[in-house]
Length: 430
Image (tube, rainbow, N blue to C red; front, side, top):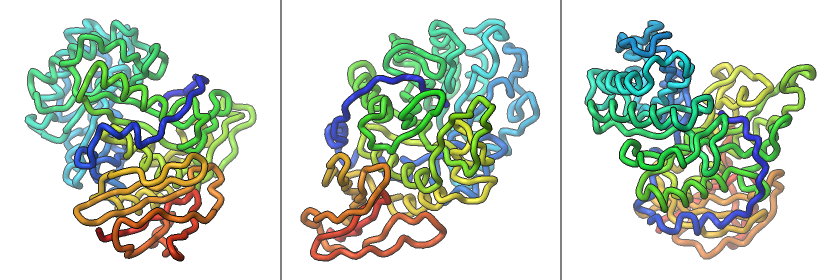
């Protein structure tokens, strides 16, 4: 959950070019692409089932080890008595695939007695307990660190290598991801890809967090996903994809954090977030969906939205929930409608990609096709476009739903249709 204080400008390449080396068959279906960030005992697996089946957990290693890095965790309990058997067991029972982000950084560096040995031992113990071949086979993948910026690059390499050795020694089937990465210098919220040199056999997945931050501190204002003036977002994804192709070919890339804050409150004018600028609930809902659409065209395998729930705090990363106090926000219904519509479908091709005007992506499942069409603008003002030649028989058209109701029907008149910032879905039989 980085603060994002970088200001480099860039130009975007068409999404179609970025995805060119992946065939439609290699692209993941949305049911195995969309994910959500949860948090241990607070996450309600049954409640969030309409959204997806991939859940990422922030797993504090300190909970397992206490203040003694050389201790043996009392698995399936944590040292603080949280029952991982109950937590992860209920998630798996509910049909979820669990990614545990092992936040070793929750135990400060000066409290690790023997960093290599203790990291190795913890990896063995975790895999033996919770890996696919473990006593409680609840966890399919782990991340070694979240945003361990307080650890030096050298220390991160030590933890990554040794914890991975421990995990692999017990359960080679347990997938291992890196912490949040950046192509460039390490900073407080990410480690440089340079830290991975020579460690390719110790990780399976490259991991990054991306936020559409238009301006850094003190406002942290976020722009719409397609905004070409964003200093990061698609630029950071492209950079990691390019680096992967050169240095770690074939390894999947996961976006494990993205999202938008939407609070109904104003920030404290005297607090640290006095100038913070959030988004509306409608923007949050629509921009989450448009981000998933954009990401689906890129050579990445998963995208986890941040966050599952919030309590309406007007500050950075404190109002990103799909629910507020476990009551669904528009973002919840939009994500659920997207999953219901595209769950079985895979990105197939870019039909239309006109910056600041109109975008159409095609998704395929067997002989069925869906076009997602929208205006890639901030305000999302509606305008009419003429659709390209249809790929089959048009059956239905619906607008993305922001409430607990089916999508609104949309009319097409001689291949002319009105689009806006809210995507519409056109269903075809090929």
